[in-house]
View: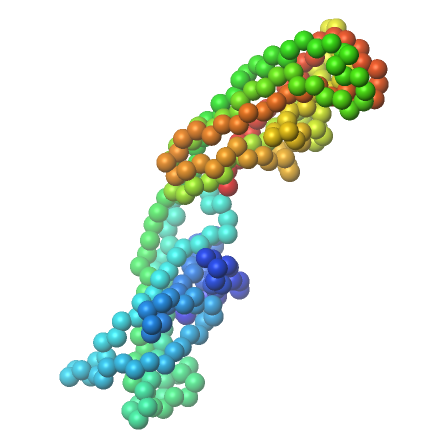
Length: 273
């Protein structure tokens, strides 16, 4: 292998490949080479060799033998949208040797003195491509009305009652690969809130002793951008719409409940992986 070894390997389709650097620090290549039986074997180190019988040189003293190599570009990061250019890469350089054929010792060949004198090379041509940004539109109601509730429905601390439901959706364009769409919620009244309970807005005739929670599949959503991502669904390469039904519940605290009005809010952020 001629490229610079990136000092790491990656597991791809059940096999380990070495990562080789390109002219872009965020993009690497992984490679496999066809063995004599036609199957591909991952290139996991800078040296690869096998023994096989090949044809003798032709009238011009050339050996015609195909070397099949499969190369993929690989990134460990979510690449930023925009154009990318990968310069030409010399992928392979090697020595083909055979017994009984004298030749000059080739530097780096390990001291071979009997060989077909050749240093075949394989190059990857320059390539350019565009990293497209994922574009999704949030589909959510601006206002969710809570149904009236008698405080007797919350007889003790920790009791919950569902008072509303709403649908959260994401409408997305086409993409090169399928990806998961996630959402997170931030408390409008207290953006630093990372609990499961929303902060109630200070309004006239405000209720107390209760809090609001948003449930996703029966589990309270944790607020805040970090550590609270929830999946809406897997988006196909063709794009489309993914929807999820969420529920809103009252939850009683430890103190006495005071009847009144309740108002809270969230902002929703979409994320993709």
